[in-house]
Length: 160
Image (cartoon, rainbow, N blue to C red):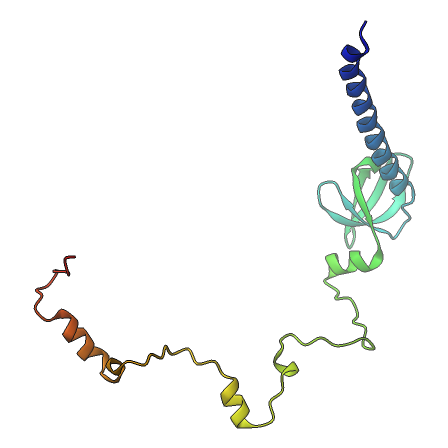
């Protein structure tokens, strides 16, 4: 047989080997995570429920879903083991303590651009009015509208 005809089969078998190897690594990591659980650890089930581990058995885990409410789950149903800070943030709404020694960043940039004088503050404001050099701008808007509509009936437009 020609080696060129065997090449697609070799590539296919190599790809299947790599895919199954990565899946086995993920399964081993999940099993290791489940085996490292201890009573008192916060967990999230694959269904999205947060609970605290009370007891560990060979294939099952006793979880405290709410104070005084216990449920037995299979170890395979544990999706993630959470550290204490993350579990308390999610379940109890605890905010992480801020590092007071670090630099404090303001919510807006107004404190970063301090102006000394009121004149400088007026100059800093942006003028949003369109300015043109023609004399027509001195007329009120109603007068401009009257000039435009002279000689036309309602609904008529300029034909070009």
